[in-house]
Length: 379
Image 1 (cartoon, helix red, strand yellow):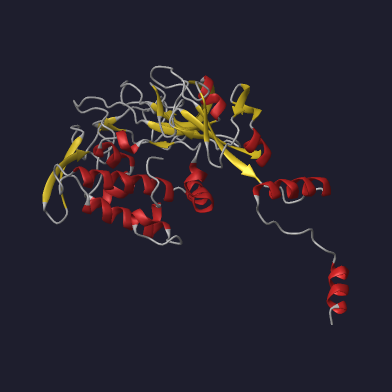
Image 2 (cartoon, rainbow, N blue to C red):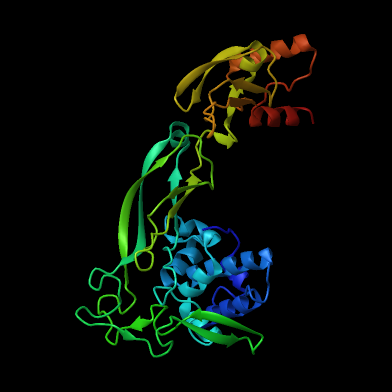
């Protein structure tokens, strides 16, 4: 999904709000941010699209349950409409049940006829999760999603197979009606709510799709992911969205990239960053240590006197740049670990070393009973 804001916050409702409360809240925001009431206001358009995204999720029981349980992460991999690229009129037609009442019926259905240009299908959005190894090399990912497809029974007409359409009596075949909304504040020409803009309608609806002309269909495609892609970027797959009207082209599918957390590396642009625990003797004396990369192991030479937090850089061991392919670096951050248990030999050696530094160190610990005897003997 496009926004990471809380959907309940966007609509201004509590988490336990009923379906009717959510619908009313969406209608209220639609009135407030309607483009005819906010001409040229880009912020109002963004808020309208955010509200539409929130309503699409919270009005769907399955999506709402996933969102309530896991938040935005619960929606990953679920197909939704790409509201950021949709026209406001398209959104009106998507939520015809909401805007039909708001604007006196219809609110903008699909424009399928009446002398008007057929409209391309809606864009869809889904997500895939990549590992850093896949980001480094590029990959082909299988993407499964559900889209509204043309009903195979009625071929998208919405009418019962074998029946013929008749001229719509609501718009007299024009496909449009003029309506007054928001207390007469403005007038708008909208798609006819009875025929959806076709100018004709069927008296008997298709039993398979209930007159919508569309049925949900599962789709599985392979998407090529280029090396170096970043979190939140999207791959556009042309023609994999929903079907258009009257032979118009399909919309597109936008595959948004999510990158899984790596157990070792963190990403910083095209660079990779990793912590490297070393012993204090390796830090003091220097050492050659094998460190992991995304494609194997590399030798890292630590100079003597290495300090905690010091950075070492392995050139060209990071991720490729998405545009030019040049690889970033692997940045190693040194962390010096102090042992919490020592053998007697190690303790003696360190005690001797401490004397050369002229530092006082704690004496060897005594047993509990030795301390008791010493205490009693001194009384």
